[in-house]
Amino acid sequence: MHNLLQVKHPKAPLDCVFFPMVDVLPGRLVNVIGNNACPTVALTPQTVRAAFTKEEDLFAKLSVQYLFPLLNLEDRRYFRRQMFEAWEPLLGLSAEENDSAIEAGFTAQAAYDASIRRKAREVLDALERDGRLGVVLLGRPYHHDPGLNHGIAEELQKLGYAVFSQSTLPLDEDLLDRLFGEEVRAGVIPHALDISDVWKNSFSASSNNKVWAAKFVARHPNLVAVELSNFKCGHDAPIFSVIEEIVERSGTPYFAFKDLDENRPAGSIKLRLETIDYSLRRYAEGLAQRRRAEARIGRWVAEYERRLRARLDPGPPPRASDAAPSI
Image 1 (tube, rainbow, N blue to C red):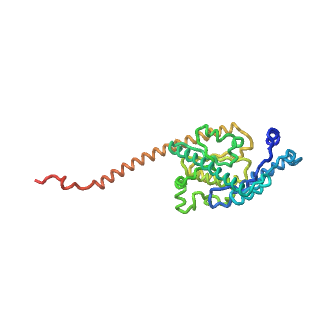
Image 2 (cartoon, rainbow, N blue to C red; image 1 turned 90 degrees about the vertical axis):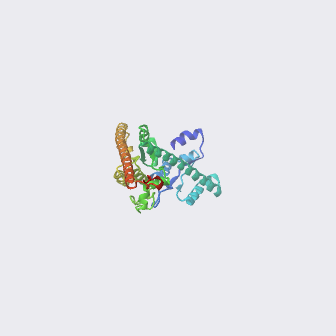
């Protein structure tokens, strides 16, 4: 905000700064209590406003309007009303123009989301085909910022691991059925996108996504989990043990970097990444050995079945025309 007002504004004057307080996020999971955003993150625009109006109102001084409406992205009708009330006084737009712009925005967001998930499925299929491992980053949206994730995701990519976001894992029906189908049919969960079997307090959108992503990782043989947490996150704390138990109970490797913001121990992070790489290489070797053993057993079983069938069913009796002539 300081850069916008003190550096950018003198070069290219701003009319308005739009910094909304997003209270509820759209969610894909089913049977959750809510999809609320982190309250600290949601109210950050208020904190920023206070910082720039404490001694003098810098927005008024620079003739910049500061918009920070509270938004609910899950309730589409309510969201349209909130956006109209925020922008109509400034732009003089009609309700129809407001609705059209919002629908265009959601359509663009859906197309982007689908393209990312499609790419994630392509990479996941390649991992399965080649017998390689990928890493699912169990973290919040701000963990995509290299200033907060300390470059951990980038370093994992350099080591040869595909890195997936917890929010953009593929949701193809065939894949979900392969991973969760047996549990759904057995009545353990009502839907593949349900987390009620492991987490009842499902009111936080990012926490819900993290728990479900942990379940996804635990069921996919080519994925492992790396969890990140910053700022002694109050929403992360209750699910630390839940995430770890979900992943490790399946025998899937689980690694965690918590309280990353306490300092920037580049040396220790590099050492931990090297340790993770070593552990995953050993894990991959074990998976490869198991696949080869399963292939050998499969060939042996197929051959044994063939011999049994040949012994039990020698074939049809010879036809009369094929029989030897009587003397």
